[in-house]
Length: 449
Image 1: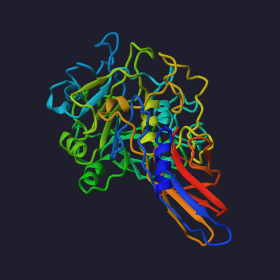
Image 2: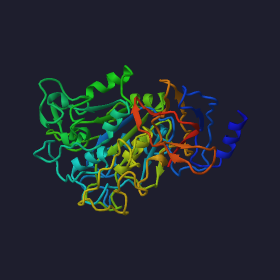
Image 3: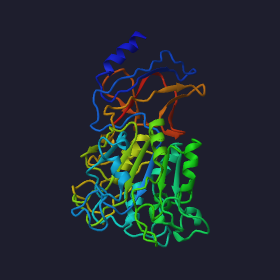
């Protein structure tokens, strides 16, 4: 063990080194682990806007068609900031207000790119990191050219064994892939008092890919029950209908008055209970794509900086997606990865101002939501584990989080580490690599770009 202790001290200065496994193996006999030690090293570098390591369940709530700020606050549609017609949202972003205790928000959240309109392209972007060339609002179909088989966020969650659910208000009156509006057969809407229903596919980000378009979706009326029964997923998308999301007034000229759509008591209970994160996001700017027009982006969580902290970091829908990829340890930066989110930006989606905010989430110009959270140090690296499922094999495993890759070296040195070339299998949130025994020693570690 003394030898491995020296390895730990020597690797401590290497910023990418997290753990070391030392394995002595022989091809002529079953592999024998002569010495096995796992050392934890604190990174010598930190990220500028690192996310907390202990984020719990995520609840993303969609709203529509209002800027956060705009050149003329009262021009139609009116901005949200300081608008008396949106009292609850403004209470969240008012320092000293009791509703703002666990709230941070972004002051410089811009449209994903010039011309990325109307609504639908922005919801596709929420899944794919691109609008995939769509610049219209149509129900998904092959004929409309907006039904895709590309890699996207919730499919990555599926492959990692991470649960997700899509709550869509009024979907019970139709199917997830057919927009429909009309009069309820009975009763009224609990939030606006009307007898209308109005479900829109263009506000459902999961319905434009064939492996998610009709999966894990239910009416938003199920959400509170699932929440109270503790049966909500790890990632949850919540979309009010086209009236309650502030997109359209009812035929009775209903005016949005800032109702806390998902229930303030439940929001606070979730945010306090398990380090959950609630994200209130709007779809697009109205009236222009420059920095004169910003989009509301609000985070509610015990992990937020809180007291209506106002971030000046530039963000966009790419920032949301990049954050989700980082939180769940998904693959968006490594082209060799099995589930790489590499959808290209459509040529029509030119750079927003400031330039670069529209880039793929792997781009250095895209910030995550880290500045909205209180924890600013790099999270602790995951553990390596080793098992011997067969007489002539060794299996090394580690959690599928943080984008770590397995490296190996024949010597316990600080240089000449190389990526392990064996196939990485991901299941139930865990990466595994099977290694055939060879003669000699091998040292393994996890590396994070």
